[in-house]
Image 1 (cartoon, helix red, strand yellow):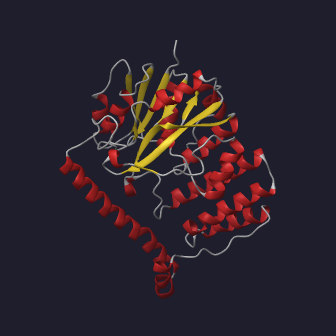
Image 2 (cartoon, one colour):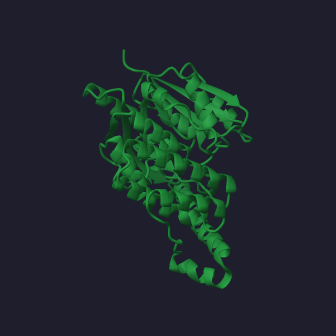
Image 3 (cartoon, helix red, strand yellow):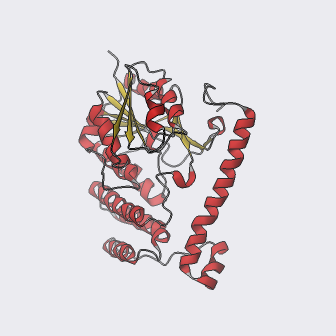
Length: 343
């Protein structure tokens, strides 16, 4: 019997997208699958829309709002699959995504191998998704993957992964203390429990950019900044548990430095901890440099206003881009029903 794949979808106030996400999961050419949607106490029509898809293969449950990590843990506890496909409630899977990755089992890949895929980002038109390869788009050992991820500040989107239950059990549950970068921390644990990553280029997922509504949007949230720092500390520890060499310390220092600007000067307590971590690694952190277009704001009004502008202007630009993309999408009159989305 072919392995059962559990597609797990946490959803919170996702009424605009959850139907398309469930359809893309149901459309998977891999026949042995179950879909579990956990509504995390949404205040909109997410639960009502999701329940329209309930069937023998689609389970929809509701819990009080506890956060995405808790919703993922709930979905996993209800699942029976030999493999786990994690998704967010606004992402899409190419119809053959899971099947392409499962083909590697016929080639002798072990259950302790973590399977990844290509991913592209889009706003309203998945058939115009941009697939931009990074240094993580290849087969890698756990050590090499984390070295590149931290040292180069690159990442793989949540839905790329196909995880065996054996690996998921070894990694343990999602950390419910994290409201930001919980996926970065979780998959780092999965990685260090694995035999390495097998990258399947032909398998694809579509990552929707939703701006300030995204869970990954930080803004000026103290809670999210504290979550990010907790996740960073844990990931540095995971990498150093594999190898505590000079190249690892260098990658960790680069990782810390690349994030200093996100905390400066709003979180002096975290900045002090980051400097202490850098000293333990044999280095020191520099005061971040703002791009020239924000430097004059800092000179005239101070760091706080410069940081506000640094967060606001990209948000305005992104909002305009989404408005344009939505307008073109409606004019073209093409949607998710297009099998390969023109990619």
